[in-house]
View (cartoon, rainbow, N blue to C red):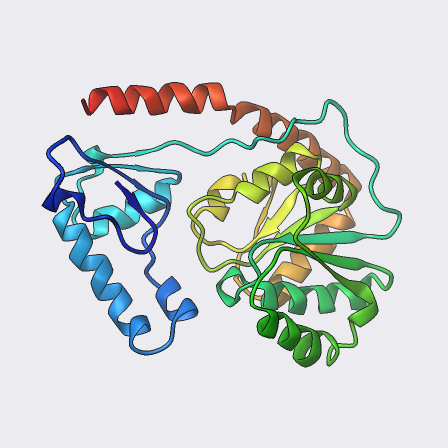
Length: 280
């Protein structure tokens, strides 16, 4: 069974052992994604379906999700986290970065992914690093993107410093990651920060909010930074500090390459197959 907001309710009709694949319990995501009444009903739905699955085995990406499941009555012994590797080929040596300091955000462009906070953080960074750029990769509601451009970027006088790339190919995405200095991520919640691992594989550390998934995909003070407070000011402060310390930045790049290599599909596949065989 697989859960993305709601499950398939297999306990009501399946006559086979059930293993539940879940990236995160939606929780506060309901409020960021939907208006009334779903924003109020969503958390109730979470409680309802997890009660149905309380004796089933759960498979997830992050340990934080396991902690959440336990709060809903799922036994910890019935949960296993297997971090998700990246398909990107890990670089053998550190890449050449853009001449201008360049920051990158890669996500669906929706409110819950924290793009507004990333833009606000960049506005602070840009005051300190005048010729810096922010690249935003991904698609979303055209009206929301238009609103970002008019109501935020133009008002912050950042139009010439921020570029929206829209959807790009996998090859182009990795190329842009290699050229960027840092990936910025302000999501309220993630099952796992896959783009963080992808960026690490291309020699690009990340500065992220302290939210589930992100705070596990980044090894704080080793492969990147998990900010102490989830605010644009704190993110900007951490970015400026890191960029100013070449030795520390370089160590995060090297550690990120090692981290990305550790998370390989062979290990993930073996753990996954073992889990599935145990549930036969």
